Amino acid sequence: MQDLLNSPRAKKSLGQNFLQDKNIATKIVNALGITHDDNVLEIGPGPGALSSLILQQNPSLFFMLEKDYHWARVRFDEVKNSLKEKEAQKHQVILGDALNFDWERFGPDWKFIGNLPYNIASPIMWDLLSNHNGFKRAVFMIQKEVAERIIAKPDTKAYGALSIWLQTFTCPKILFHVPPHVFFPAPKVTSSVICFEPLKNEFSPEDKSILNKLLSFCFQRRRKQLQNIFKEFFGDNGLIFLDKCDIKHSLRPENLTCNDFKKLVQIIKNKNNA
Ligand code: SAM
Image 1 (cartoon, protein in one colour):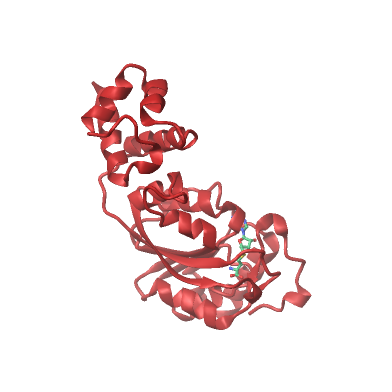
Image 2: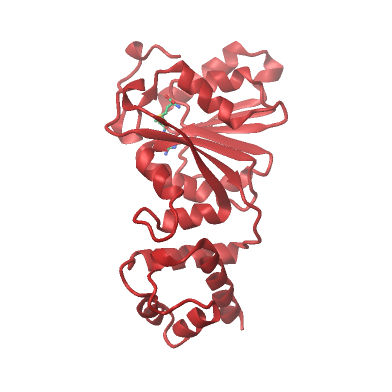
């Protein structure tokens, strides 16, 4: 792992809490189950706690996406120096922003990994894991509270738009928790390592867009009854949509399953296209 004493200060704005424990780094990388056929993208490699272990497993392609020029440069030099030229061509360091990135360039042969910056982990996962081209598996370390929201079930406080969105496109599972003292600087919160397997579904870009709007509209009003939300959103059609999906008018958004939302999306789409 990199000598952090000779490196610039960790940048809070970039969520830089660097993992210092090699056993935990090994557990995270092993959870991705890398084979030589896999392509791997690491988000936010920083000083390389995970990157050097991934390199050792020799995936088919290994890309690293880092926003901090300093750490992108360090990773670039590592790849250049440590590998034979032919192998180095299989590895790329991309200086870029995971919040504004074209995930469509990655497809079903890719696995994703990262100790994500806590402040932007949710939007990164939201976009990346619903990418239309699919993926093989993803393993991320994120804030424990966010991990618990992702796997939450209906009728619970933690259940919301993030749970429904990610459970629509993936099967998420918390693997283990990680205490703050294994990072430098130590964050204030406990972390969790979460694994995502893709779910096969027939969601078109149009379906995705309808679900996205529906979730945002519903969960901005999570304490309201669906009948009020749907009347406000769809006018006279609102109650018809609920009836067609056998959903009681008096329920609230947090009472609906992912399947309920899927059915609603289809009904709304059919109406839009009628
Ligand atoms: N992988 C390293 C580790 O485990 O110690 C660093 C993890 S640190 C929690 C998050 C990393 O993400 C940092 O290297 C940071 O510079 C990078 N980062 C922050 N915002 C980013 C963004 N928008 N796009 C890409 N990388 C980002």
